[in-house]
Length: 463
Ligand code: ATP
Image (cartoon, rainbow, N blue to C red; front, side, top):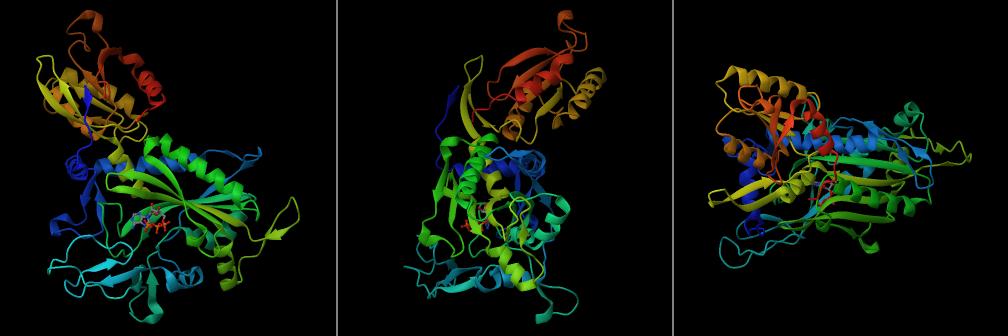
């Protein structure tokens, strides 16, 4: 079994696999698609759900101990996509959430001035660009039946602002104290000038954001804490550590209120790109909303008696970019040789078992033998309570393995005549358990099957 070198047209192959196996489809495909919008099929929807679950489990459901040994909380929020338009005035988005836009005078195409193409103009020769002008990325809509200035509203361009706007409510109900975090997962919308690199830069996407509220002055140490914690999380879901990096923003690149920002960068086939930004944003946002509304009082610290607006550390990640990183990381092609010496290329998605859209596939050897199907269905039902399980009874077992390899299913279980006592007597009540990565097949007892899979699920994973 040889691992092949990554092919040059890797993204094309991954895109084809994503369509073939139901990870990602073009939005509105039968109408010709819509640039910058994507749909996730059965496998992709589950992959994204697993990413969200891993994040929510780690941050909202698990307990946390600070470096000084104190317990702290992170609580959840699920806010509306459309908020009061004044939110975006206070946050600065109405004024300045924009990218520099240029037009080519010849071909009329539009580009981001900081991401100009290195291709020639389709009208011939070089592009002839206009001076850059600001293009606001917020999608606008109208609330209610009348379309006038008073009814203008925006689809949120980030989930974070709702966390600041609901800060006081959440603090009051949570019986928590600083330091603590508020976490949210949800859709965000940006009218990107050039959506590109498959799902990487989309116009509708999903964010997972935490605002972690801290005492002013502790920004640097908490920023360090979050950089490390978030890097560890990316490794825990199976991304290759050698493809992950931290990139620190220079002081000159920081917003005036921020004291630090670093991006978590992943080596995509199309280059090193941001998965997540982790910023120390001071108390700018909270103060902006406090000033605009007069409704957010200073926080009272019960331990020291001080009053202040907490500072925040903001780890802000994109679910779609993480899904794309996982898909590109998992994609492997191998040359395999069968027992007759015939070679073929096996495409296999090596997902971390906890992230894979299917954990176990259950195969009755033949679909037209009720005694096999009944037994297989019993096993399917038992496994279903613990894992994400798929039933597959079509084609020969070899073809089913190939299909599951492309979905990234770590284990396949085959129920055959031995299992039901119509073959080798010593193999009664055993099944074949096949491993995705080693392709090893072993006979295990039905009784131990759940425990064996559970145990393997918890074993360290090497991407
Ligand atoms: P970029 O520089 O790539 O445009 P950004 O720095 O503007 O990203 P943030 O505003 O920090 O991004 O958003 C936080 C996260 O949200 C990003 O790290 C990314 O994972 C995700 N994200 C932002 N814009 C998009 C987009 N257009 N498509 C998909 N995900 C996005």
